[in-house]
Image (cartoon, rainbow, N blue to C red; front, side, top):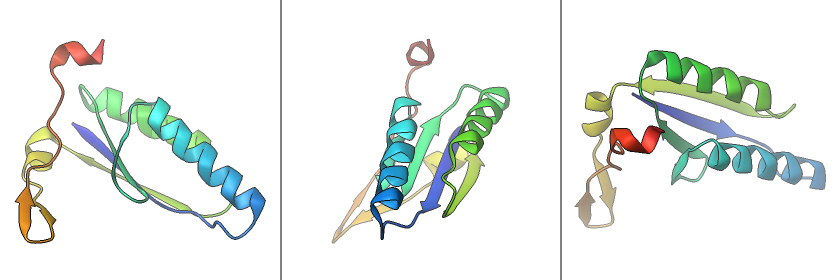
Length: 101
């Protein structure tokens, strides 16, 4: 299972930039990988783990801005198609089970 976080946070003021940076650092420390600017994804072992990480994000959302979460099964995530200019690339692979420990 994968949790994908999409966010749109303001960056006009120093306070906004600090909140953006802290939220991004939280995502990285919590095991998310950057797919695109403001789009991060994290593999989870099961629905219970995905729910836990969704609740964790909920506690970290900055005062201003918007965060959306989408949960996908590993199969749904593997069907993602990625394009870079003229070439096609595979999405990030689900880590081995040992990576979860």
